[in-house]
Length: 155
View (cartoon, rainbow, N blue to C red):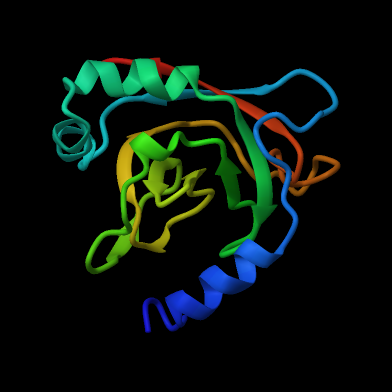
């Protein structure tokens, strides 16, 4: 079990669900998420990809990402559209604390942690964007079908 979940069973279940792909029609303009490329795993991901850390931000900006589904914690959107050549596995053991606003990758997904929580994704950077606001309708900024565009600031 990983984080209390059987990964094989979860993978089978998720793959059976229809989810919008990066080419699915979506209403409205993409939500822009500004990202500081300051994540603790940025250099590790760059090495895995065979590029420099600055190139990771350029690539992140170029992906046609769409919210496939939401879960884990309120406001956590699983973004689909990560190229197969840029997918990275979950970390071997999760961190007990991932700060709110952390931008990460795991398998075919990219996501932004809306609040502090444990997590096992590779962290590329961080954002100050408010992902959940109970005074907003809907409260979650990123809902299924929403297109997302990252803009990377380099440290």
